[in-house]
Amino acid sequence: MIFESMLILRNTMYILLIILAIFLFYLFVLLKIIRKIHPFPIPAFATRIIDNPIRRRFIQKPDLIATRMKFEPGMQVLEIGPGKGTYTKVVAKQILPDGKVYAIDIQESIIEKLKDRIKGENISNVEPKVDDAYNLSFEDKSIDRIFAVACLPEIPSPVKVLEEFKRVLKNDGLISLCELFIDPDYPLRRTEKKWAINAGLIFIEQFGNFFSYQLHFGKKN
Image (cartoon, rainbow, N blue to C red):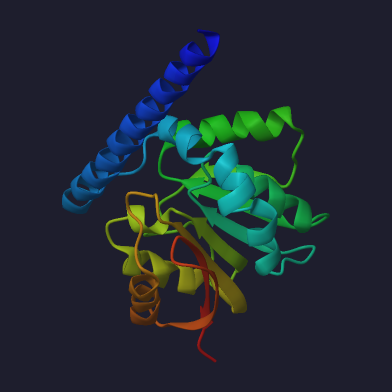
């Protein structure tokens, strides 16, 4: 009797998981359609769902993504769309003691939460700020590294943003773009490469696979 009850419970759980998977799949497709028709920034509360332990441990590991960018102490780094600051904190450690991460977002609520987090963790070399990716408040050729994790495709005119990246990037600097398939705005690698080329950048290297990739771009000599 106990065995039969456990079997029924297990089968019920399997059925519920299947239903949940189907629901999430259709929700994912619906979000893709909506955001293609009407692009808008990811709401602040959604960053908690996107930035989850499974993603950080198995898919887009912060340490691995940061290592690929070859940071050095003293670098000036610009991050677009920092979310909860998971990648921000990893990068900040790698550019100590004199380096600095400027974590920018168009949504003030995200920036305020990030400020509270880095203050609570005593991180001194991160400056969260509200900024416009189309018109960055940084001088020409002032940034060593620019990176965006599942963020650039959210912006309606990615080529215009990449042109602005090019303006503030040093001649030997690097732009790193990371994308994840489950993101409603996920673009194919060839699409993002086309955006970068149209912005006057050159492709350097790529990592990952179809479901999770990282692309590096630089300036033409």
